[in-house]
Length: 243
Length: 233
Image 1 (cartoon, rainbow over the protein chains, first blue to last red):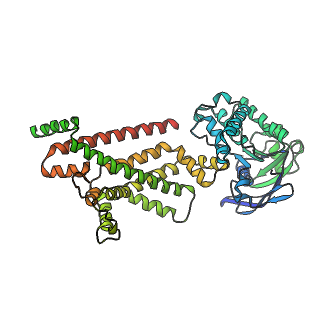
Image 2 (cartoon, rainbow over the protein chains, first blue to last red):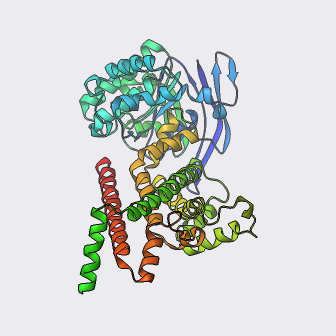
Image 3 (cartoon, chains in turn red, purple):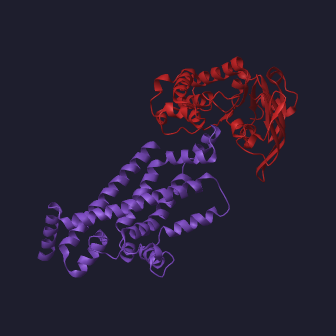
């Protein structure tokens, strides 16, 4: 079980104009929401702390209690407990069932259990009637729910979501927000989300991480952040002067 | 003109009556090219998969060399293999020259780069989010590459068909290493060359019609798989 994630002085450069440099600590039981203008490095940070991209320098440490879990980037067993749902998660050209079952098959779960867990995941996201449909025939909202089900079925200790409701209609967005909230409330695991939706961040977040141009400018509990951030940049962001 | 029409008429008669010599030659052609494409598909897909897993030093050189070999002239492939398999060659002890096995080997040399090159191109041009999504769900780079190949399976099938189409219609390689021995290493293309040389056109035209039919069927299949691929998009 992953109970804490710490990133120390991670640096990631993509070109001469962009550099991510930050440190942070994530605990289980809270919903962390990363916010900030476009290009501030939110998705990059999410990929790094979810072990899907290595930093150029710095460390990412995963803990079970106070025990440091060794070499997380090369620890496949650990990486399979930390799941990222990317912004544009690819939908495989097979049935909805097979899409959701993919991760379970990688983990060599037996067929009977795969079936049970897939059905459970379909119920969670409201796609039971689509089980045997070709996944590439789903609407955008259904596809995003499928992507979420594909992650949740793996029962990750740490779940990372990159704009899970981007371009979705309010109904589909609402379904996904409810699932995310329930996971945090009922399971108490690590959940980190990136969003551009200010109101969504306000409604869901327990803790806010505000980023700007590759740096974490402010990290605080949601109530304090949205009531009155301490830094000038965060204030400008909250009051809509930078976006 | 009468001569051409007469040849066509006799050729049709050979086909309809399932002339024994015709059937044997067609059957051998399918056996040789069928086995060659099976071997080439195995090797070619293994090469494509290896190139798809991750970037590594020298990858671009391998891709460039493979792409060059896609255009390898069949006679050159045949000549190379002949030198290897001849009595004074390094593999002469295998005594494979002028056997169907040598023909299969020659056609495998021709088809493998085609299947490898076209399959790798299909994977490389696939949506990169497929591989990334597979990795986020816990796939190793190898498993993610397999997943991507499954997603472009119709393009890969088309590459195998393209490989088969190339080798079933070639004459240079199989002529040099097979020797065009009647009833043993005589396939459609070498038989057409021989019969045309002899001025005996019935069998040549009949085999030509069969080859055209195969070509038509292959193109039909390719078109079908292209449509399947487009419908996925």
